[in-house]
Amino acid sequence: MEAQPNPVKIVEVCRVGPMAPASSAPSSVLPLTVFDLLWLRFPPIQRLFFYELPSHLGTTAAFSETVFPRLKQSLSLTLQIWPLLAGNLAWPRNSDKPVIQCSDVDTVSLTVAESGADFHHLSDKSSFREATEYHSHLPNLPSSHARVPVLALQVTLFPNSGFSVGYSAHHAVVDGKTLTMFMNAWASICSSSNSMADQPFYGRAFLSEDQERAMLNRVLNQDGPNNKSLMLMDLKSPGDAAFVSFQLTRANIETLKNRVRARLERNQQTDGHLSNFTAISAFVWVCLIKLHGMRGGEKARLLFAADCRARLDPPVPSTYFGNCVVGCCATADVDGLLGEDGVAMAAKVIGEAVDDLKHADLKAAQDLIFGRSSSPISVDKVFTIAASPRFEFYKVDFGWGRPRKVELTSIDRTGAFSLSDSGDGTAIVEIGLALKKDKVADFATLFASGLEAFGRP
Image (cartoon, rainbow, N blue to C red; front, side, top):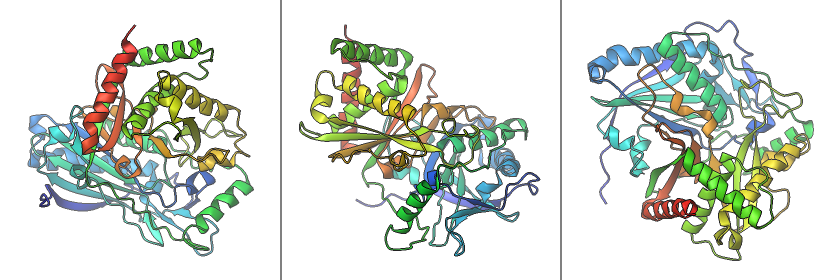
């Protein structure tokens, strides 16, 4: 098949730094922690926000004269509070661990582009979008063995329709919550010229020297002894991947929870930690197991992250800058997950994984940091969850309204499914997946028929 021409034209590549040196800037060198090191060579987190514009601002001239200058100036103001995002990740020869380096002359790459693609198609929640359609709307985060930028941004105009804001962020420097805080700060300053956004906390989360050394040894021994390379893994997106979104209303979720609770009680099992997250994750996990044709006799595993800012001793503030998550692991026999009570069984093991975290000693629980089960159980397929509805990315408003669509595009390389809040007035949770195009209709059928079955008396 002949390659389609790239609809995106690069207009300019700017370098944006703090408007003035930050008076309260942290040390110019900030070391990574055990929570960060796990992600050292992981591909960047990439996300796209699509915003509609009123007709008088949607032209190329109006955008370049009004909208983009506000975005650029507010970014500079935001970097006064978040100067480390303009820095770079490095591993100096005299340092035993990688560090974030930041100086007054460091800047963030901000690409300005114009797209001839269909804005309403790319930001549509009801149909699938080919993964390749998004790639040119995202900024590149160049990596080398010695240095990697922390953040890159791209603003793309879709003339007479709207614009997108895309970022590529180094996962060893920031987690989803940190990115949420940054985007909210930038949007708040842009929409109201209010520079009094929450200050990120630059202290370091610490567990134990043994944990730090174990993780450093793991990083150094990856691909050779004493490997200090910062080159990011080059995970490829399948050429036939497509993004799809599914919405769940409050009524859908309550129906799921009620049916799961009833099935567990019928089997004389407690519902344990039956939250919205547990019920939704269980339902999607079972749908994916069926989609992939897993069979009885196999085992499946679900990995997801849990924020532990409040669980450390002492705890760190909610505004902590960096990664502060641990891995939770649910493992189950596929036989049970494919049965009549499959979603209930899935919810039970996911709830048990969440409960295990409550009772874990984080200082001793190395397996939580590595995100794997403490028992070496062999599994046939691993599924993962990315993001969280608690991030509330659909509330990121730069002053021209909330986003029409937010897409976590990096899941096309990682294979995870994402959970987020929803910009839809009736739905409260949006599920994002990157599937092979020939699997999209099959998953949609499994999802719809599953919800219908749970809704029956």
